[in-house]
Image (cartoon, rainbow, N blue to C red):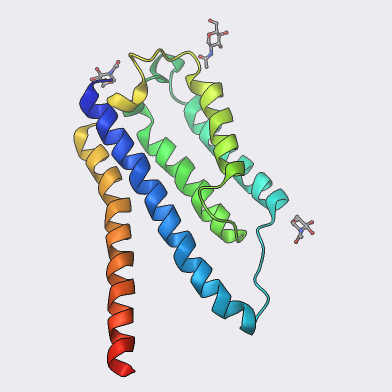
Length: 163
Ligand SMILES: *[C@@H]1O[C@H](CO)[C@@H](O)[C@H](O)[C@H]1NC(C)=O
Ligand SMILES: *[C@@H]1O[C@H](CO)[C@@H](O)[C@H](O)[C@H]1NC(C)=O
Ligand SMILES: *[C@@H]1O[C@H](CO)[C@@H](O)[C@H](O)[C@H]1NC(C)=O
């Protein structure tokens, strides 16, 4: 992994975490208001476990179509990997759980062990996606975060004016 790749990957992870944190803060605020209206639905972990395993089975099926020789090269399975992470995200929301969450992270680590345990650090996968893809991966959470901030600012200004 060249140092650029590492920096980009770190940015991506940080962006994702910041975004998750912002969403959590925002939905926390919403929840406070909502609980007075209706009982908040809680994350059903046993359902979540089952749902992410379904995502995992699809991913395993897709990976089986790719020759194991290419399992350390993200270029060959970036789409499948995206579908998998996206699947865990949608399913988490579907069963009223936050994403990312420890259960999903644990499952993703199990999947990584299954497919990427033999990948050496040099060939690690995460270097090779075309830069375009990485940039998009990084920009999405950053953009979402900025949009959230803008929305919060806009809403508070608006309520100032109204008040
Ligand atoms: C969680 O989901 C399972 C399976 O759908 C269900 O049997 C269980 O009652 C649910 N638990 C809660 C607390 O809703
Ligand atoms: C890793 O290597 C071991 C030993 O060569 C092999 O048995 C195993 O199937 C490999 N695992 C993966 C995910 O390629
Ligand atoms: C991954 O696959 C692509 C496309 O075949 C190739 O250009 C690249 O060099 C490969 N990377 C590694 C580390 O094998």
